[in-house]
Amino acid sequence: MSAPKKGDLSSSEKELFEVITRGNVQEASRLLGCKDVRVNCLDEYGMTPLMHAAYKGKADMCKLLLQHGADVNCNEHEHGYTALMFAGLSGNTEIAWMMLDAGAETDVVNSVGRTAAQMAAFVGQHDCVTVINNFFSRARLDYYTKPQGLEKEPKLPPKLAGPLHKIIMSTNLNPVKMVLLVQENPLLAEVEALDKCRRVMELISEKCIKQQDMNEVLAMKMHYISCVLGKCASFLKDREDKLEGLIKSLLKGRDSDGFPVFQEKFIRECIRKFPYCDATLLQQLVRSIAPVEIGNDPTAMSVLTQAITGQVGFMDAEFCTTCGEKGAEKRCSICKMVIYCNPTCQKMHWFTHKKVCKKLQEQREKQEAESAKLRMKQSSEESKAVTEATESMEQLSVETNSDVTSSNAAAETSDATSIPDAEN
Ligand SMILES: [Zn+2]
Ligand SMILES: [Zn+2]
Image (cartoon, rainbow, N blue to C red; front, side, top):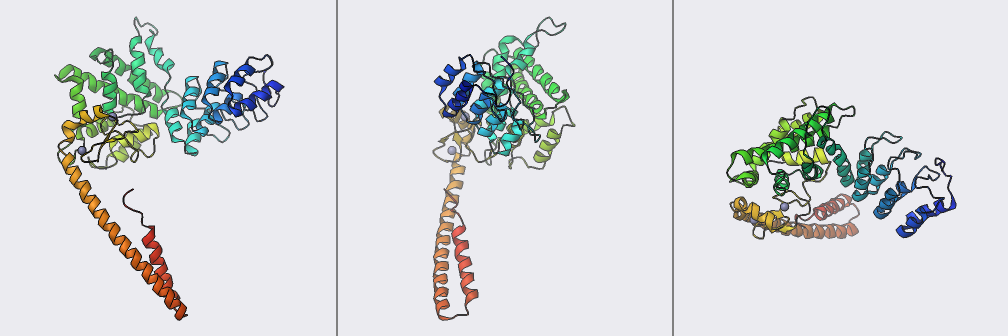
């Protein structure tokens, strides 16, 4: 079969493009079995079937095309877009993931010099940016599970690659979550295993800095993971209460407001210990964190998360107070000021939260009372402004020279109504 040329399509191939648009996977599967259908054929713009499926957000179709050998790195599109870029534009994280997993290059640029992550960011698809920036293929990790050069044994025992890869791929950098991931795997929760993983993380970090297209984000992430694993190892070695103790230390809040001081200091220390002092990312992080007094916003966790995952709006989404997972919905029924994934996370946090729960409840009630008062004041001012406006309107109908008063009153009215409620 000849190499595909732009717009040179058999009638079955034309049909395939239509079927993809309609999302009929079964029909696409039948067509892909035909002799005159090339999975990497190109339409007149140089788009492959995979690019179409990715752009239209059709995950099942992408899967099918990849199974039939679709080239994930085809770059014949007239503006140099790849399937990963189309996935980023569609905002479908599952598809972005699929493309990466199939070996999509992340550093290819289109005709205006943008990578897939930059394209996704440009159109506001931040979840896709996160997926792309944090992708680290299992194959890259598996390299360390084979003896290299004169090594008698690999740096990473193969059985550790799975659990370690799970930690690497997590977009939740909360140290509590990472310790929980270590704890759930008996192979990993052991000093010797942790030390090996830590060394591999530092090696990858170094490689990310020294390779030609430097990836500071991934280097920082690997370094950070290495620090957390190191902390786990030291607690397993020296402490009676092992990883439970580490989790408690990370969660323990100070008496005044429950702010987890140890956790904040630990994350700051991890960042400071990043060994590549010239890295722009390190300097950026230090500049954002250093002037912030401990206990104030932004926290080191939020700054680090934003830098590494590109997650925007980290502060206002609903994150578990204990483990930092997104989408937590269970609120402490007393203070209603902290949220958790589930009762397990709440239970883990209670030993420290119970010291401030009452105080938080009082604070919330005080705030609520104040905003209720404010709302009442606002609505009375509003009606006053309306009355004034009406009066001046009436005046306007009598006196023809009252332009100034009436426009003032109108301005007042619109001001009063544009203040949003403090609560929603
Ligand atoms: Zn949680
Ligand atoms: Zn509470």
